[in-house]
Length: 113
Length: 112
Image 1 (cartoon, chains in turn yellow, brown):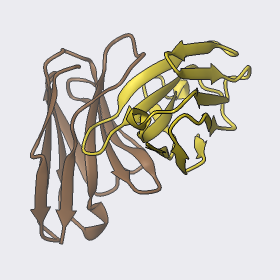
Image 2 (cartoon, rainbow over the protein chains, first blue to last red):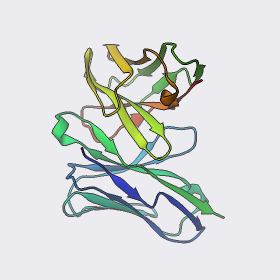
Image 3 (spheres, rainbow over the protein chains, first blue to last red):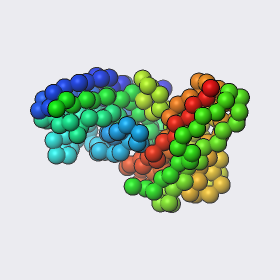
Image 4 (tube, rainbow over the protein chains, first blue to last red):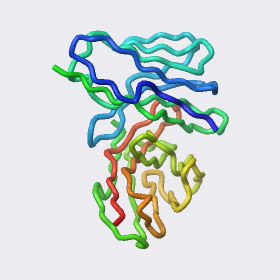
């Protein structure tokens, strides 16, 4: 069974601080996605990484896919209250033969003004 | 935005009653999914569909069944609801490219 573990589970920081969220697995994924979810809503895609070692930037958010495609990280620079939410990573389960995804347990981020 | 709606948005039901949740999409996406979200567990796949009348089980399928008679609709049925099925249920779709999942707004189900 493929598992994705995220750390930390909870993070409360002050506005302006930097943070990193990790998504780790013992399995190889063909692609990995990061989502953000706000209360009462469904997750919304932030980025998809496909190539081992790939780095993608989305304003103050930097996403990296591990060389072996087993792990990923999300780094936020100068966090703002608007970054508050639940961050989820999801790996594509290619072995299933269809587009099936395994989700991590999530990191709940709170940025205090 | 893949135009995904879920109904109902909230439901309270009693143990032992049947419940059907509906997901409707307007983007003609081939793949549709039902997840449940519980604290500490993230999103867990219940069932998914890769085409009309083509469905398969996910990791937490016990007690749930699904049907997809049209591309745009994916129904999730709890044959006899139990308190352990109290959760928030999300429907999602993926197009043929498979690079992104689009999620509906969720249904909060409480089984008393």
